Length: 102
Image 1 (cartoon, one colour):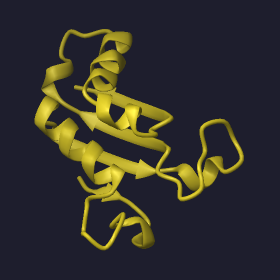
Image 2: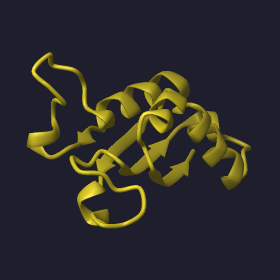
Image 3: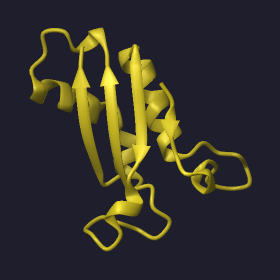
Image 4: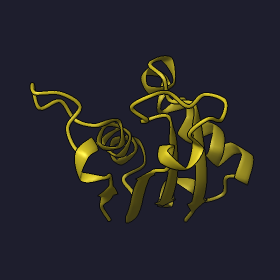
């Protein structure tokens, strides 16, 4: 139940702003009140691919277990997560790999 971020990506600048992984986790916690959540920055695995940027913070894996997904199809779950993160997509988040369940 924690965010997995490389130590050098823990803070994005000297003002101690949260990393994108931390912001994603917080937004998903608020929206879905999960009983399990993991947000993993996989940007380093996508260097040179579409959407990759120097400094990373573009590609993530999310494991999320929440009662909020009860009765929702796989597509509806994915759409709900995507709708919960508009600011992140607008500011450079390129890809999410989602593992969503009740």
